[in-house]
Length: 198
Image (cartoon, rainbow, N blue to C red; front, top):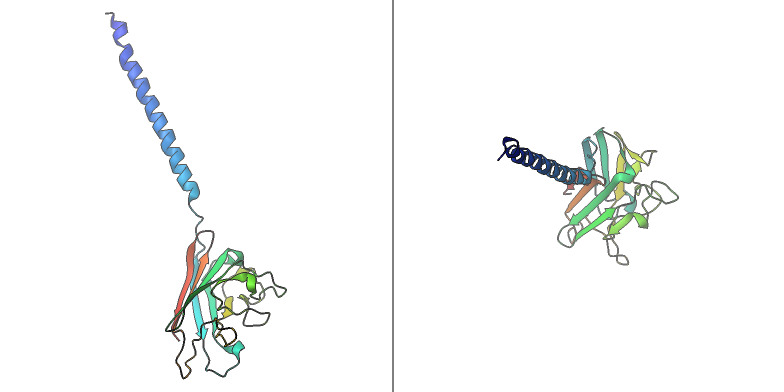
């Protein structure tokens, strides 16, 4: 056997090994970049929020009762059309969830909650006057530091029994815990979470 003929095998095997490494690298990079493409965009940095849930005694005007306010204290501004609000009421007689979606609203009063904005259990009040506004004050399209998200939890009536009554009447409250979770929909991240026990 010729000396030159024996050198062909190591060269061919080296070429095959390089080819295999290149194919594996291409396969892994396609998989990695495919997975990386599915990663959601990062959530905005909402550094701080504060929440308030006002419950007045029975007999008070409905418009002044069971008002939820979540105020953006510090951090980045966020477009309200990238926000979804989950509202959960629980207690002796209620275990329900509603969502505020498709914000800002499409109603004539640009900040008012209407029926297209509420999904799930019918406990979020709708209408054109305060406190049925989503963003306070004027710019209803952006939630920025100093702005408040505001809406009202319905107490329910005999004719429209849905709602969640947190008032301490003689029979006791229907509900005693309210959770309000604000989600940044593009990243599916929770940017604010408040639990109220009036």
